[in-house]
Structure formats: structure tokens, C-alpha cells
Image (cartoon, rainbow, N blue to C red; front, side, top):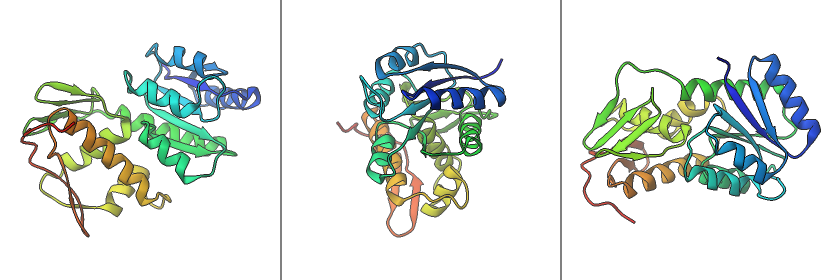
Length: 231
């Protein structure tokens, strides 16, 4: 069965271009022209991925992403005309997995989509675990002492990288290359945003010692003893 992708974009010309490009690439599509319609369709949970414009009427893309992340973990790729780092950082803060800036080439967009879908559907032979923390990439499922923790695709990839190298400090440039691809221009603030979100989610679930920063060196997986959850 082909992956179903939801296009939430208020410009009908861009929607048509995306629909044609996705159809040619073998994906099925549905679409919405404003925030409320897009949110209602996205909450159905039947999509493998969502292409989300930031400048939407009714509910803007950032708020739509934030609200969707309260209950769903469907990968989200932002389509934005704003070439402003603040907007990109906010998007990651609210749970987006990636973004492209308009105008963009269909080829670039398809490459981003394939990369995200490959990451989120990558099978593994067994789950990863350390202390109270468990991760099953095949199911896209993370848990702390049996409590499910909802992570974005990017956060899950980041945690998996650390869990596959327990006790080893991973340099920040290596994390960036593995998450986004070698040679991609990604700011330190973007990685910081994902790390901060990951720490907050795991800490709230009762594992505040999961991600450790070794200043001047990189990041490593902590002992995951599940001490005392922080608010």
C-alpha cells in the first residue's frame, strides 16, 4: 500500500504542484486549504506524513503542529516562505521533523520526504533498552518504566543514536550529520532544540538522567536510573 501524505497549504497552485509531484513519486495524497480543516484531517491518524504550511488561515501551521503533537506523532515537514531562523526553531520546538523554504524544488522535497519516511519506518531486529528507558524503532515507541513517551521522528532518531552507543560521547557534528545528512547546513540551535525537547519529555516521564552533555565534547546517554521526574 502506498504511503498517504496530507498536504495542508492555502495556496491552490502549490497544492496542485505538490499533489502532482507526490503522485508521480508513487504516494497517495489528501489535502486541506486552511488550519481547521487540516487539523481535523490530521487527527484522523491515517497519514504517514504531513506537509504543513506555516502561514495558514484559521490556525497557523505552528499552532496546528503544537496541537497535533499533544496526541499524535505523525512526521511533519514544514513548508515555509519565511527564511527566518526563529520560525524554524519554533517549528522544531513545536515538534516538526524537518522543513523546506519556499521556493523549493520538487526534487529536494521528495528527497526530504523519502528520508523522513525511511527513518520512521526503519525496522530493527530488537529494541534498545537502558535502565528504565526502552526504545522500539520498529513500532516508533519509547517508554520509561512502562509509560509511553510520545516523540517526534527526529527525537526518536536522536535517542536511538545515543542508545546504540551507550557510555560513548557522540560529538555534536556527528549527531548533526547522522540526523540530517553529511554537508547539510544545520545550526547548533536546531540540534539544541531537539535535545531540549527530548530531555523535557523523558524527564517528565521519570527519566531526568537520560541525556547528558559533556561540555566541549558532545552528548551521551545517561544511566537512565529513573530517579525523580522533574516538572
